[in-house]
Amino acid sequence: MARDLLLTGGLVVDGTGAPPRHADVLVRDGRVEAIGSPVADADERDVTGRVVCPGFVDIHTHSDLTLLSDPRALSKVHQGVTTEVVGNCGLGVAPPGTDIEGLRGAVSYLDLDPSVGWPWRDLAGYLDAVDAAWPGVNVAALVGHLPLHAAVCGLTDRPASTVDLDRMTGLLGDALDAGAVGLSTGLVYAPLPFVREEELVALARVTASRNKVFAWHIRNYDDDLIDSAAQAVRVARETGCRTQISHLQAVGPRNWGGVRHVLDLVDAALADGFDVGVDVYPYLHGNAPLAQLLPAWAQDGGQAAWMPTLRDPVVRDRVRTQWTDRESRWDEITISWTAGPAPAPELGRTVADLAAERGTTGSEVVLDILAELGMGVMMTAGGRSETDLLTVLAHPASVVASDGLALDPNGVTGAGLPHPRSYGTFPRYLTRYGRDDLADAVRRCTSAPAARVGLTDRGVLRPGAPADVVVFDPATLTDTATFTAPHRFAAGIDLVLVNGVSTVDGGRHTGARAGKVERRH
Image 1 (cartoon, rainbow, N blue to C red):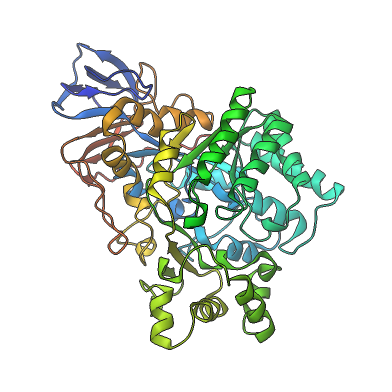
Image 2: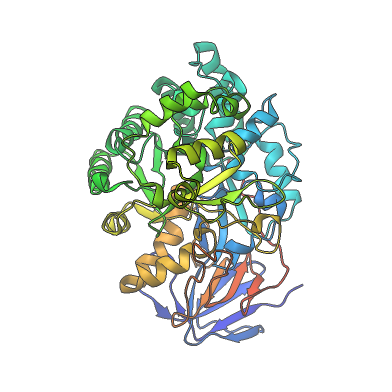
């Protein structure tokens, strides 16, 4: 049996927002035993000059399959994350339905390791698979709207009938009862752009009946940002469902300032007694499949159907017409990852550079790449405002979440040039935006996001709570990952305990995999 651990001399920031205080922390049998001046026969570790806080709770991640590729969750635990919530943006992996290959194509954003099989038939089976992999962090799951909808209606533009909604809500209820912490939707990922509001309301009612959260990647973050957010708030008001608006941002200069109007909608809902929150990551670039640029109609039927159509001159002309007044420029879009054994020559290049090199337009470059690679190509995209970011970060209903993946820099998931948020979100936030109020900044990374998804025993240092603990040096804490060199661990993280087990020590992974699958019934 492991000996007790006593962390002495550190500045305890307990995750609740309470003022920091110097205190010792005693860890016993995987839990926080005492905080203050405990006396125990324990292994002592002097952490004077360091901050001792709860492990970060990342409620918006896409690690559904990368945790099965490498359960250590290296890029996350090295930045202090001890709990991951998967299944965001509607891009879950259960239920897989009968067309598993079609679903894998639709959610290929998650599917970085082709060797990972999909043996499960439902969410309970998926959680069993994660449990059997011995994850290095705690894992909770949202139910992805896309697999739910695809299992019933397929990948085409077909509205759900009353019978379809009954089947879909039944599948959702089963998944929530199996321990999922809520539901997510992603209304830009085909076939979800075709979904009608009545379907969203029906699913929200089931989610509300279990007192769980509904996380929204809304329909649009550029010209229709406000109307898209209004839909999420409208469904929250109609159903009473706890609601989370994911990665709130406004894309394109003409839309900057729009987040203030969205937050006004949130404030009005909160004032009327509805539980609506937002999350955000501390970067001015996003990351998504390049196919997200396509109009919804051009993605009908799944990638096996739409990829060949992108070589049709009529289809290409129609897409180009819709791109005439794009909200972001081609020089703001960089190819960050491509599927296959070797990276494509476009990797790390902006669309504008590729167009200039080839003597053509950005539209032609993107259509050519998508016709060849379909969903197997990712981009990073700019066009955001730091003023908007600061506005969202300052709002009392906002929490910090990465929108990233648990990656292994030396493994198959370490390919390409992914968004650095997978490696640096929380150190970046704490050092660039959270220094003026460390207690509140830590709260937004720990207890506040945990509460949004019902994990109320995570994200806080208190006697009896699981010992998910981060010790960091405020003088050296920094995110070292960049867009051109993203596979770099954060600096300044001295110690990470997951359920009381030392997982990162002195900047090195110990090999421990002490995470638990969180099934919330």
